[in-house]
Image (cartoon, rainbow, N blue to C red; front, side, top):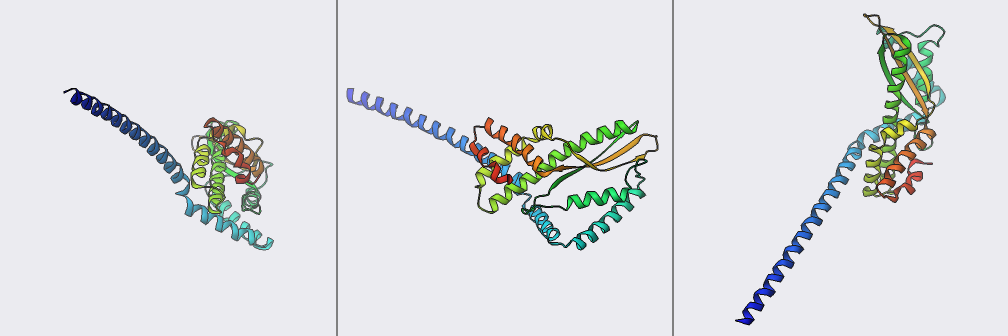
Length: 253
């Protein structure tokens, strides 16, 4: 009888142990699944755009190989087409400003400048806004263009991360972590943006007499990379991630 009681005690303890073990395994599995899902979501955000990034890179390679005469011809064709469209839509430039064709020509020449890694020498962004007067509309358009510029910087950094993975210089897991930080850093990037260059500025008068102003701004790519580096580094440090040490290599700094 006493032996039977001891056996039941032992069985009870084994049961408690197995229950605790299963609970631990269950919690660990949930944690693992959560981490895996997080990595998957972050990866899809960037790598879902792989084909687009490859197409952009291919197009940049073609432009990079163009002779000066070929590039001039391409810019001239694109400029004339764009100027014709804008004028048809009622866009004009302020008195004393460069003609619209000249502004667009300068814009496209800057846009088609790439470094040896096919990273643009200038990051470009557009925006337009409506106001009761010209100055108010221009201020709002410029502010929105800077927001769009931060988004464009993110896009270029995504492409750099993807290229680093393709060259087997970064694991997919590390890339997912950096991508997650890039996605979370838009506001900080925006606040870090310094002086931009207005390359196109035009306006049109609407039927209600309000002014609609459109601007296109350019930002030096080295300054853009520094702004991105600062923002991403801060986010990685918050997560306790030491990947911030690899940012210089990824961004080509």
